Each structure stands twice: as structure tokens, then as C-alpha cells.
Image 1: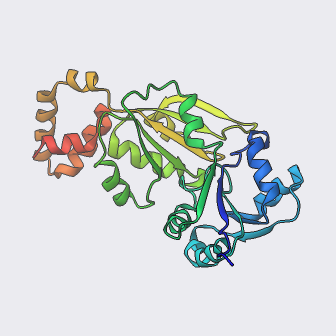
Image 2 (image 1 turned 180 degrees about the vertical axis):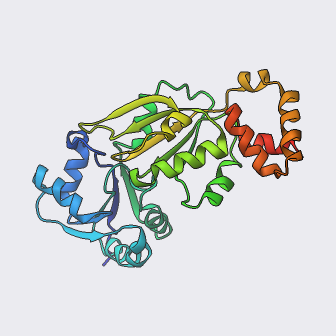
Length: 275
């Protein structure tokens, strides 16, 4: 008697707002499986009820319990049970739980099937009008500490768009940090994508940082520095101003911050200028 066939791990994209954005194939697979590993079981129950997917055994798989639940999920798969892996919204593994389980499934030679669909990343890029011929940098959610954000951002290429996700309650603080670290740059705000109050806005970091309130999940695309503008700046004039501020007792980092705000430039560029 041969060994029992292993189950399949289906990695399924869910709508990020509008429930109509789910694919026919996703619904077909979700109806067929008994087990669903969910980032948020409560939100997935809404999808079950809306599309009448039938009775499911839901396994919570949010970030803090991901490692603890993996072993049990792999056991189910190895005994022939199919499992659907879903995020609260969008695509698993893209700034959402799932990548660790998927990696472990590959190691155990378990079949993995992608069921593609919506992602806030591709959705925002598709309506931004940005040319991606040189590529882009996707960071997902930035670290919460300013020092860690600075460390990440200052290592990035200067000529590529940067894309981040951010929660509404942290957006104001993150924007102030971005403005200080990167200088004032053009940016594209995609907020509440596919929902009733969807907002798509071209602006810059300075104007956006002056906004008092943000509602809904946010995708932000930050454009590269304007190289032409940088080349046109009178660097000798800036050096004279820096020298004057230094004579008043300011340290290099303080001078860089002051001049960065005045000229809408990166504080890092100005700090390096004074070395």
C-alpha cells in the first residue's frame, strides 16, 4: 500500500476592499477546501457569508502566532488535507503573514498553488502613471523607530521610486520622518483602494506631512530626488550658510536639518557636504 498523497497549500489573494474583486478561481478553491489559514478569522467570515462558501475550519495565522501554528498546518498537509492560505486582505506573503509557512512547505515537498488576485502594491502602481522601466523599491511597512527607518532609507538607490505601506494612526509621524530623512519629494498617495472613499493624490511629502488626519490603509509611492533641481542649487552659497551656522555653535547634524528644510533637500546630502 503506497504512502498517502500529501495535500496542497493554496495561496489565495483576497479583495483589499471591494468584495467583487475576488476571482472565480479563488471562490472555487475556497469552496472546495475544508481548512483555511487566515490572518484574521473575523474578516474572513464576512467573505464566507457573502459568497456562501460553506462550513470551514478556520486556523488563525496572524504575525504573532505564525511560527507556533506552522507545525500543525504542515501536519495537516502531510496527511493529505488541502489548506487555503489567505491574508486579511490582498496577497499572503506581501507584507502579510504566510511566507514562513510557504518556505516550510517547500522544504517538506508539499505542493503549492498560487491563486493570484489583488494586491495594494500593484493596484497603486497601476493607477500612478509612473514608468517602471528602471524598477522600484518596495519596503512594505517601515520599522517604527525613526533611527531604524533612517538606516533602511539611506541605503536605498537614489534613482528609484520607493513604495511603502502604512497604517493611518502612524502616517503623520512617518511622513515627518520621511521628510527629514529624504527631503521634500514628490509622492503618490493611494488610500482606501477599491473602497467608497478611495483617494488617489499626487502631492509632495511636505504638503502631505501637514495633513492632520488619515483614514484607511495607505500605500505611498515616493519619487526619486529631482536631479535637475539638485544640480541647479548654489552649493557655494549653502556652504557659506553652513559655515555661518557653525560659527553660531550649531553642530553639523543640526545645520544639515536646518538647511534641508530650507532647500527641500535630503539632510544626508547636506551632512556629507560638511564633512
